[in-house]
Structure formats: C-alpha cells, structure tokens
Image 1: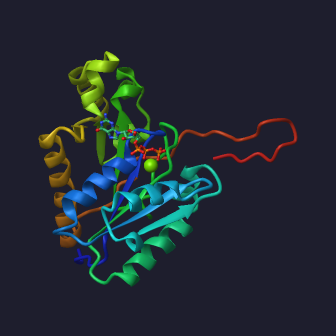
Image 2: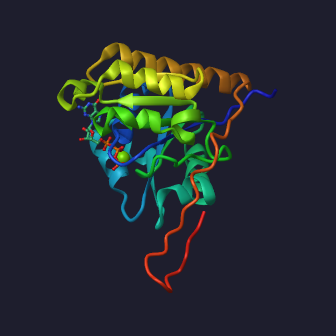
Amino acid sequence: MVCSDRALRVGVCGPVGTGKSSLIALLCRELSETLSLAVVTNDIYTDEDARLLRAAGVLDADRIRAVETGACPHTAIRDDITANLIAVEELEGDYAGLDVVMIESGGDNLTATFSPALVDVQIFVLDIAGGGDVARKGGPGIERADLLIVNKTDLAPYVGVDRDQMVADAEAARDGRPVIALSRTDRSSIDALTSWIRHQFAHHREGTLVPVDPGPMAAHSHAHSPGDHVHAH
Ligand SMILES: Nc1nc2c(ncn2[C@@H]2O[C@H](COP(=O)(O)OP(=O)(O)OP(=O)(O)O)[C@@H](O)[C@H]2O)c(=O)[nH]1
Ligand SMILES: [Mg+2]
C-alpha cells in the first residue's frame, strides 16, 4: 500500500435534524488545533448548513464550502459525486497539508449512503429522540456505515427511550461494527468520537484504510402525478 498524503474524506449522513452539522462543529472544535480541517456541506436549495457552521466560528469561513444539490441530497453523495469531488479537490488545492475533509449530506432518508469513490469512511447519525426502534429498522447506513452514532443521548429521559437498549439493538444490527452513544454534554462520548476519527486518520496516512461501500440506498422514484418526470434510483 502507498501512503496517502491527500486529506482523509469523512462522510456524515443520516435523516433530517439528527445532529450532523452539530457533530461536525463539535469535531472542528475538538480537532482543529492538531489537525488541518475543512468541511463541505450539501443542501438542496440553500447553503444553510455552511452558514450555520461558519456562524459557529469553528473554522475559518473559507474552509467551509457549500454544494447546492438541486435534488435529493443522496444524488450528490452517491449517484453523481462530481460537485462534491470538485469542492473537496479545490479545498485540498487551496490548503496544502489538509488532514481531514468532512462532507455533510443534506438530511435524507434512512437508507442514504455515500459512494466509496467520494469518502474514505462514513458516519451515519441517528437521533435518540427519533425513537428507540429506529436502530432496529436496519438499512445500509445503520447496518454497515463505518460508524453509527446514536445522538443526543441527553434527551433519552425526556422522550422515554431506553438508551442502553437502543445501543444494544444498533450493535446487534451491525455485526460488530462500532456504535457510539453521543451527546454534546457527555465528555467521554466526545472523546470516543475524536479517538475514532484519529484512528481512521492514522490508517489513512499509513495507506491501510480501504473504503467499504455500505451498499446502495433502497430503490425509489420521485413521480408525483401522472406525466411527471420519473427520477428513479
Ligand atoms: N439535546 C441535544 N441536542 C442536540 C445535540 N446535537 C445536536 N442537537 C440539536 O439538534 C438540532 C439539529 O441539529 P443539526 O446539527 O442542525 O442537525 P442536522 O442533522 O445537521 O440537520 P439537517 O442538516 O437539517 O438534516 C439542533 O437544534 C441542535 O442544537 C445533542 O447532543 N443534544
Ligand atoms: Mg445539517
């Protein structure tokens, strides 16, 4: 294997509002003193996530770039990754020695996954307040993303979800792949997340990290009424 000196590309996806941008902001705060970071966000019609991250002041604003997908977010992270690859390569060109680029998918359905041609590792984010049963529902992201985050665990008592049961269900669905129960208020969970990223980065630099495809999202189409253009995957 050849050592890689381009940035480690980390994909972050999951349903709407599960805490993807917050997780990226958290990683920027935790890692930017020791690693050179950049972020690419994907939104359908806006650059909302990029503006949110710039406003958080976690990185120089120019290190946060937005891709406006103009269609379901999964199309730009899996079907045609050109716009995202261009954004990543521009960042790598603009910032020599970039270590990690995080790519946030717009919030999407439970089966959205990144193409392994775009990211080296991918994180799938679930919200504990979305219900304890979601971890059992499976799908390529929950079952086979490189890391599954059960997020906002601080909310578990308020929404009547058994945190340990949800994590156990997620672990059972994942055949030994890692699960982190995360909350921005839980220091040890943040440490577990940052050490997972550092570990992936070390593997990437050694040239021993091989991107694994969690598998395609479920087939579906986007026709609303007879005669509409049908966009199928
Ligand atoms: N209680 C709690 N709330 C959190 C945590 N992390 C994120 N949130 C909140 O969850 C909401 C959604 O967070 P975002 O980071 O914007 O979620 P997202 O997945 O990026 O959303 P989209 O990009 O719109 O799909 C915000 O109100 C956050 O403040 C957490 O650890 N605990
Ligand atoms: Mg977001």
